[in-house]
Length: 263
Ligand SMILES: C[S@@+](CC[C@H](N)C(=O)[O-])C[C@H]1O[C@@H](n2cnc3c(N)ncnc32)[C@H](O)[C@@H]1O
Image (tube, rainbow, N blue to C red):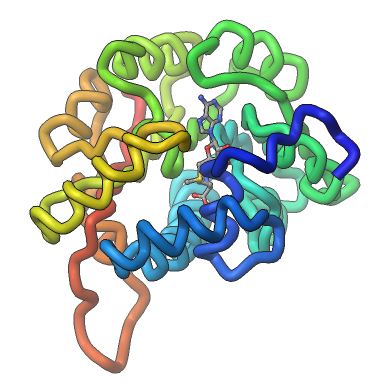
């Protein structure tokens, strides 16, 4: 890879995620760290894939039931199948989607992300979630912030430690958005697995990869203060408006999601 900013000596979350998703945009260092984590917590591979099905159900719900036409997706990840703009513009070709990520490989692949419909708009901002003002300044160039926006934080808030002030970051991003906007968060938890996951996460956090904070239902719920959580509230990602499954109800996994409307 010619881009000097792409560090192939340290595992990166976007590349490990792509590895677990079965993609091809990862390096040896990501596969080693990814395998080590998956050995201790095998559900991570299923969670990565199930989270993409969740994305599709959430975008469908917001587009069809709530009439949302603008999406700000922070922590976009490497392009894969059925990215947010693919899903939203399939339902409404005029939908506007702005992605944000701070990973240089995601930036390098952004061109693939940027192919949307001619009627709609697909944008990309290279920014860190810890700088919400920069994200808002970039977003308002492409999104009409006088109309509802769905702020999507899909598998990213865990990279914010409590010291980063994730609650303040979420409030800063939601503040300028009008009534009828939505906040969507899914994030890693440890309410199902227990000790094995705590140990796997501690080991990963002790290494060179960006540390991740697992949060429980109450902690995740605090990010939705002042907003109206829609049914069924905060639940494992498998249980948020699941599609009918002939094999019965889905099992809970250690990833929680909530979707809320700004009153
Ligand atoms: C676990 S992946 C999730 C990708 C995608 N949202 C999904 O659900 O499939 C987390 C993404 O967040 C990005 N990320 C992590 N920390 C970030 C930060 N501080 N600012 C912006 N993006 C960040 C990573 O580069 C990665 O692409």
